[in-house]
Amino acid sequence: MASSFEDKTKKTLEALGVRDAAGVESLFAEAQNQLEAERSSLVENPPADTAEREAAIKALRDRWLARKNGLVTFINENWLRKAPAALKPAAGRCFNQLRNQAVTVETEELRKVVPVQKMAGPVSAEESLKKLSEAQRNKQFAI
Image 1: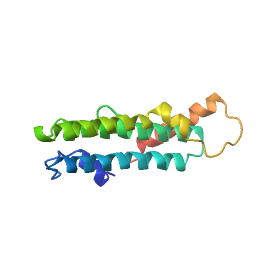
Image 2 (image 1 turned 180 degrees about the vertical axis):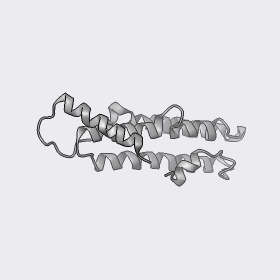
Image 3 (image 1 turned 90 degrees about the horizontal axis):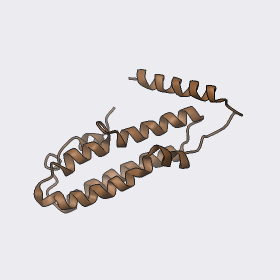
Image 4 (image 1 turned 135 degrees about the horizontal axis):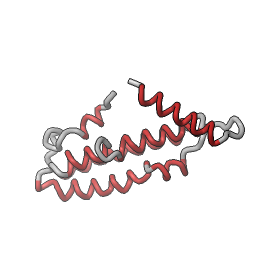
């Protein structure tokens, strides 16, 4: 299920109709807003247990920062590298700001701010690993 923003990351600035620095800044502002909205949603609506929390953190991190299929990678390839020479300085500045903001979805940073909604008592390490494995398996087979 691709969002319209995700579709934009797979197109060049030219294909998106961006012709000036103001357009570049507007597009990158949209990316920053999208990143912050997704991060805030996870923080404000915490998962019910540690395993779900770890799976949600990993999913958000991978969506934005995965090396081959992350949104930051697509933005770098399509908006920065393929930008016309006249727009590269603005695209470069905006990309650096986005990349700095993307640190907020690194796994360790998210663990600091994403609580577990409720604790049902002590959970052993074995139980945590079992739940995490189940969550990953469910994610793997989800369509």
